[in-house]
Length: 127
Image 1: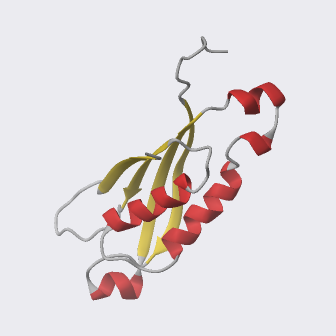
Image 2: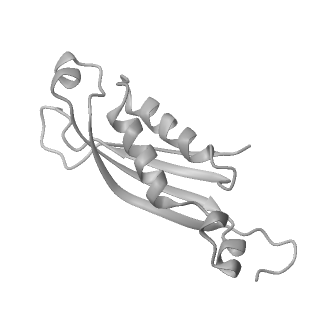
């Protein structure tokens, strides 16, 4: 247990969630789509869940993965910044989540030059 009054910042990380989406500003991106990869790092207090060994007191990352997958495969947006915000909103809909860091990878972006990955990362808090 942390000292009384100390802030608890535990993390649950879901990394490398892959889904085919049709996001982008170009017609060919909307038509063909491409693979997007999502990393989500949730900040929350897992003390009660651990003490009671109770899934209901934490974030069910299996359920969360399906919710995030649905966002990526769902309604297209122009910017991966917008996609990242939508993913963060899903995470923050759980009242246990105090903050979330989302990274959206777009490794198949067509840049015209060799590259490994393009990412947008955001951090959002409940406040």
